[in-house]
Image 1 (cartoon, rainbow, N blue to C red):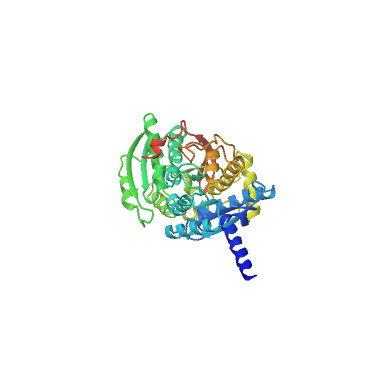
Image 2 (cartoon, helix red, strand yellow):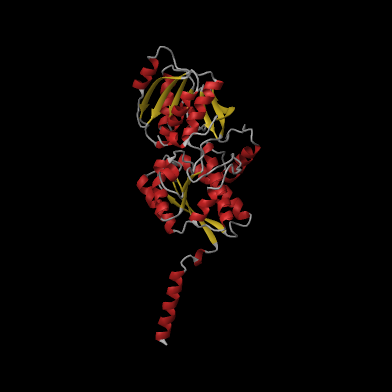
Length: 395
């Protein structure tokens, strides 16, 4: 009798080992290896909250492939080493999709863990071309629009709508995102007749002072028509504050990273400051679907979105879920194949296109946000005249 019991137990173990996923076969798991602490939380949390809105919508409608989506989380603590651990934690938890931080530098450790495990990773809103095939691998995507598109958009818009001809380029060398903004600006500027670069400089995000760089701007024969500032939080606020305190009033152009009113009290009555956004959080977006989403976000979280970086989180789940449904499976290779078939796939924040060469958006329609007297709002919209080519993204 004891022998038969041992034999039965051995057989059950063998069956369990052969079919390890059966216990979770009634659900699909999305694992968030994102920042719940540290400065990246300001970018990751809004996008993650937006992702949860789409997940709740899918679950309420019957689920994905007839299964409910379950969410598991691990905190990267805005630390690269912790990011790798967080990625492994959600992978060990059975994640079918690994969601990683908004920024390539901070999200890539978890994304690389997912790539090694043969899992799809989606950066919440990273905007460096490296946050995808080029820096992680063929199973990695980003839900947002490339930083280079932001730089190119602001250059072309300022040229056409603000009459800017003389530009000054100021690059914060801290992250790939910052470099990407200036890469797009560099690609676009030579295409603009009579536009020229009258000076350029660099600084680091943690620099307490950029007095030397400001002195070189003020030493120019005349103030530039526009300053292309390629930076992100937390150091961005200090840079803008110092530029304005020095009496430089030229339009400041930046990427989407400086969207949001949460930092504006640090630069009272800021004016002549512009950023491109995928949708406006200020209640003035021309697309009614954006306003509808903003209301849903407030109902879920108790507050309005803090910046446009909420929106890619919703888009990410939306396009991934469509690809899963079309593939009929969560198998990574099958889902990647469906994602790469998407060309101008409709989403409430604009169409999305992926290909075997690029898992990002290299063009989009942007709303242009102007900060005037400390108050932000939509002032215009712009779509670059041609997509940013891959060779410009890889410079």
